[in-house]
Length: 310
Image 1 (cartoon, helix red, strand yellow):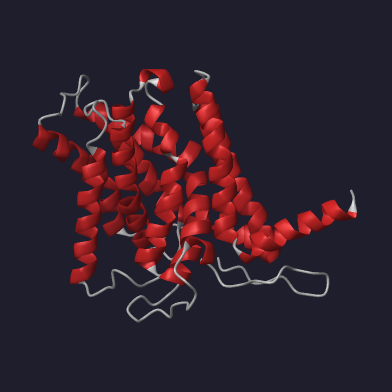
Image 2: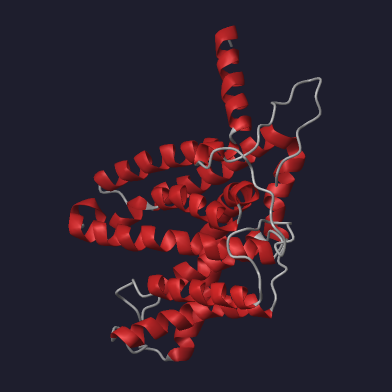
């Protein structure tokens, strides 16, 4: 390998260490969107692209974590998958997603009678919940909650950090608007409606996950289960239109926010590991995604690894 190539690699590594969130988002969105769009244009099922998305997200998060803080940072990244710390209140929140989805369907007259009974529908939901969590949400949230949102909340607080996370999170999911009927079977009006629901749901989901991360002291496992509950609620056969889970999420987020407010807990400030009853010290850097974390020098042979923010 030439000296020029080595210099370029060092430069890429240095920039990734300086701006870990920006680096992950650029790589993940920059690779996933073209790949999934190409699959859709070719008439190929989106599944290989969704699998690649999980590998890109998790792999990039692990690589950048190792550059920032060595093997210890990688262990901390995946350590969130072993943290539960979720009480009865948040178990009710997880159970509320399908209940509220059914409630929205009833209120809008779009609920269909379960063909095999309500018990079967409940078992189907639980099966979907576990399947989605194991095959997708655990790995997605390792990157989005454990790497991106946790860092942004440390620097920007609960609200801003969650909303900033919603931007790349929403962008990387744009191809899903064409998943059901394919690129050629989906009209642009249908795609725009799908995007409206998708991009409208993203800030509420990320904010609710942000609160959950604070309350569970950084449980990526709990965040993944909430994400899976959201997706499983939208896949229920009794709501075939597939949109009722989005207003249900909005209602759930508002209820959790109201409960948090009544208990005197902040709605804007807060991060994982902080005492969110007190003001959180904020960065003086410009508020933008590209200035999401404090500067960290790259590790050299004469330096000890920098402590990873996670």
